[in-house]
Image 1 (cartoon, rainbow, N blue to C red):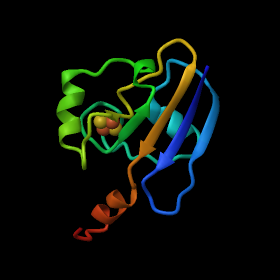
Image 2: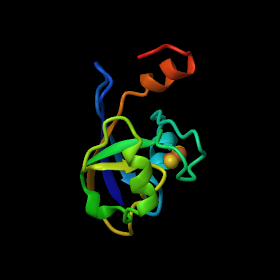
Image 3: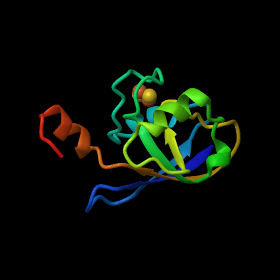
Image 4: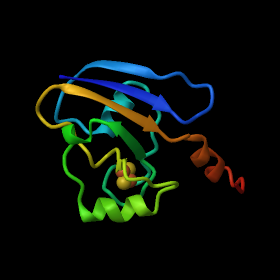
Length: 117
Ligand code: FES
C-alpha cells in the first residue's frame, strides 16, 4: 500500500493526501478514483499528453518509462525531468510514499472554450 501526497499547480488549491492506495493502478486512475481532475483525452492510450503530471518524489515506485511516453511528454506543457504521463505509470507492488504535482487543469478548459492563452 502507498501514501500519495497530491499537490496542485492551480493557485489556491490545497494538497490532499491519499492513504492506503493499492499497487498496480495508474496515477491517472488513482486521481480519478479520488475525485482529482486530470485530463485524459486519448482514453489512456498514450496518444496525447493531457494526463501529464510531475512525480516530485517516489519515481522508483512506478513502472518504467517507455520511449513512446517520453515522446508525448515532450509535447506536454512545461515538461521536466520528473514528468510522467499519469495513464502510463503504475504503482509497482510494494509500500512507500510518493508526492505528485498536478498541472493546472484550467489550461484545458480554456483550450476547449477557444480562449487563446
Ligand atoms: S490520457 Fe492520453 S496519454 Fe494519458
